[in-house]
Amino acid sequence: MNGQRTANSSQLLELLGLGFVLLTGLAYFYSAHFEDFLGSTIVLFAAMLPAALWMTSRSGGIPIFPTAAILYWLYYGLPTIRGVGEHAGYSPRHVLEADLAVALFLFVATGSWVQFLRPRRSARRKVRASQSMNKRAVVSLVMIGLTLGVSFYLLLYSSFADMLGNATGVVRAVLLAPMLLACYLLGYGRAKGVFSGLQWIIALSALSVVLVLQIGGLQLISGATEVGAALLGYIFTARRVPWLTTLLVAALISIFQAGKADIRDRYANVNVKAEMTPSLVSNWFSEGLGAMSNSASHQSVADRASLLDQLVRVMVWTPDHVPYLYGASYTYLPAMLVPRIINPSRASSQVVMNLLDVRYGFLTREQTSKTAVGVNIIPEAFANFGYLGVSIIAMIFGLFTGFFSQLSINEEATALPSLLAIAAMVTVIDMEADLSYLLTTFFQSVIAITVFYHGLRFAFGTEPAGRLRQVS
Image 1 (cartoon, rainbow, N blue to C red):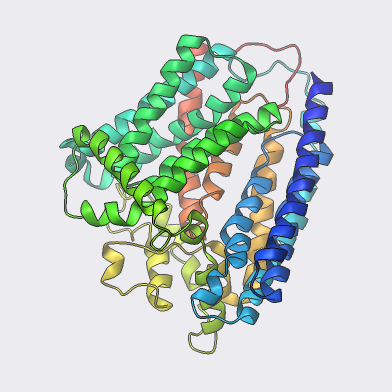
Image 2: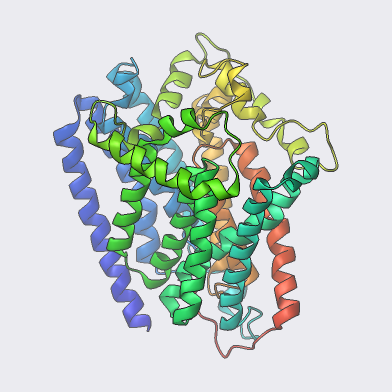
């Protein structure tokens, strides 16, 4: 088993190297400016370095930071190649400076994260029985988590949603945190072969219902996150990429992304009911296909997901046109950690995003009540303290992701440290969230998951294990 895992890790490392060569070649041939090629290549190297270090270390654990680092290339490096910055009216030099800020963030974060690649001494000396749940509980956790997710979205479509009031956030955290864990463990369980044929069909059916209800609520990113969590659970466990499934998922996301704007306009003033979601999903799919066939109106997923424009504008405007915030955006965090049910006057969870959107002209104050433009933690850090802020947040990010990854080393997938690591990974891959929103979301998830875990342990008990198995 260890030999197979090592062989699969070597194959992934070779695939990573091949990907770097191919993507560098893509940048060379498709970049309109040398600055774009240089910037995207530096970001690509900085984004792939953590994955290479994790694979060569063979330390196991949940690779939280390597996963997030790859996304930084998708949200910054790939849009650079496509000329998103220049299309928005910025010079190649400004785009290069933004890419270098992203690379600075990734390199500093890597430096603080890499020290956690080795297991803790207590984990290496562990001889006690495993406190994680048995394989039967893996299946149960997946089924219960997906059931809670279906229940939450059905609740949103019902008349009970208005009755929740300030308790909506608490209910969301309690029901959705286990569902996100279930999505990751769905992939993990598939790789480990813990599902019977019927159990697998039921689990996929429940996930499909969740996705349909989310798409009916125009929540494409949420659905993509859950499917991505399931794929990551499989890839990290099996150490191989399910190419057919991955390509199919990418194709479906591209289709829905292409039709997103038109569908939002069509259903902007419609009170969507649960029974309307199948027809809405069908219309959205047809609209996306039509948009993709019309190259003049089609905007790629890479362009829509880009955060490059936000970062370039923040760097160009600060401090010449807009003064530094000097930490003001982080002062909302303590109050945001208090649930709204306790503090009804608490600011919105998007208060920092709205602040930055208005400050840098992405939206007007009136528009923030209807929509939002995601601002990543890098632009937020620069808006506060410039490059120093980027470096400090990078160090914190590396320590945070490294700590929870190390907790999961030599732990089974259903042990509490692993569940918390999964929650941390699902949290940090939300690229359009500011720091306060990320930490608030994670804090709520930790509480919900801890309660959920101990509830399952009480229900299923513990199973002694002769030796600990690594998560990956």
